[in-house]
Amino acid sequence: MVDITSKTNTLRKAVATARLKVSSIQTIEAVLAKKVPKGDVFEFSRAAGLFAVKKTSDVIPDCHPLPIEYTAITHEIEGMYIIIRVEVHTIYKTGVEVEAMHGASVTALTIYDMLKPIDKGIEIENIRLEHKSGGKSQYKLVSQDQLKCGVIVCSDRISAGEKQDISGKTIIQKLESYKIETNHYDIIPDDFQQIQQKVMALVEQEFNLLIFTGGTGLSPRDVTPDAITPLLDREIPGMMENVRKYGQERMPYAMLSRGVAGFIKSTLVITLPGSVKGAEESMDALFPAVLHVLKVQKGADHA
Image (cartoon, rainbow, N blue to C red; front, side):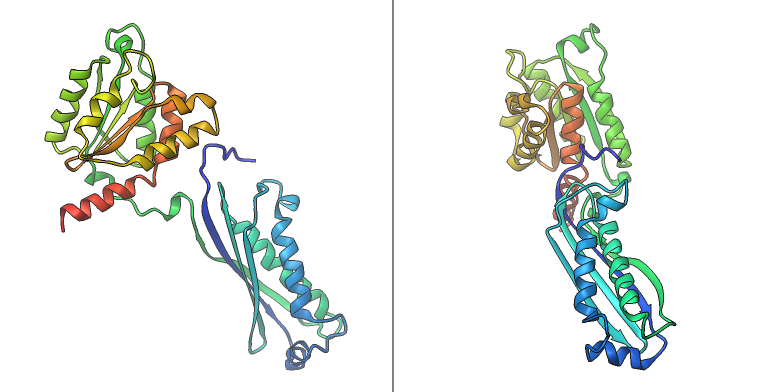
């Protein structure tokens, strides 16, 4: 199965339909009158579809087991057609498209099995995904050419040439995966004044997004949050709360990060851990959803 441990839980929904065609209007009349020898077609097939949704990962190898929070199965008659609609919801790391389609297919097959003794011309015409939502695909992002982004590494050792930067480059690669170009990349020491000077210089150049990596821990030289916090016009506590929660689920020391985030004028400033894993996981926790903040900010600037 695909590794989904880097993903975050979100509300995900999917709707699938199946179309089943009978060959006689008498078949439809028997279904509606509940006179099919094998029983109530709608109720039996609905029960089968519910089981199918919940058992999807048991029969499709690459599907992850996941919590099904809601399933609704409905039937509609349109002439000689029985239209099956299956809606599935979950709060999890991956979507429920296959679960919805599996439910629709088994519902249709159950109807086929129940009606074949009285109608030899039944056909299941199609099974299709009608709608899905949730996960990264739901976020409408500002286009990359509208963003001016900077990545700044805060580290005494890296700035002195004693160590190579990996965290900053990891962040740049993550941004590239969202088609965001890094317009400024720099390495500076863990120095209170230099951090403040750097951020204010880039704010004056009207950068939309600044990501600092390093200096968010508890050592005496970890001063990035201390330097950034007094400059923030509007702090956004929930962003770093989510980063720490996401990290805590993967490594217990994540609770020690003191990262902050917020706006200085119209520039969103985010401070991430200096470790490669910490920086990578923080980006996974924040993006792409955090880019909605920039979309809102751009709208406010043009209001």
